[in-house]
Length: 124
Image (tube, rainbow, N blue to C red; front, side, top):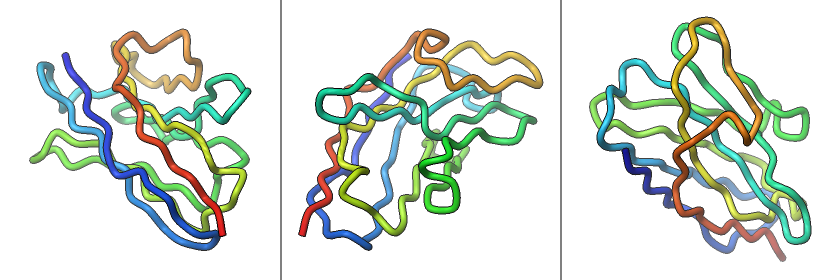
C-alpha cells in the first residue's frame, strides 16, 4: 500500500486549496482513510476521517470549511479546504487503516500507512 499526498502550497487567508491523496495497492472500495495535520511545534491531529458506510469525522476547528471526498475511479481521497486561516498552516498527511464497519477513527495511533505529507502555509 502506498499513499501520495499533494496539493499544498503558499496561500493567503480566505483562499481555498484541494489536497489529493492517491492510494495504490489495496481495495479502494472498502476504505478507511484520514487527513491529519501537524502544525509547527504541535502534535499530529486528525481533522477529517472517513470510513465506508459511516458518516465522516471532522475536527471542530475545520467543520464547515473542510470537506473530505473520494473518487473511486482514481483511487484518490481529497480534502477540500475553504476559507483558509493562518492557523491552518501545517504539514498535511493522509493515512489509511484497516476498515472497521460502522467506525471512523480520528486517532493517529489507529492508522498504519502514511503518506509523506504536503505543506500548507497560510500567510498574507
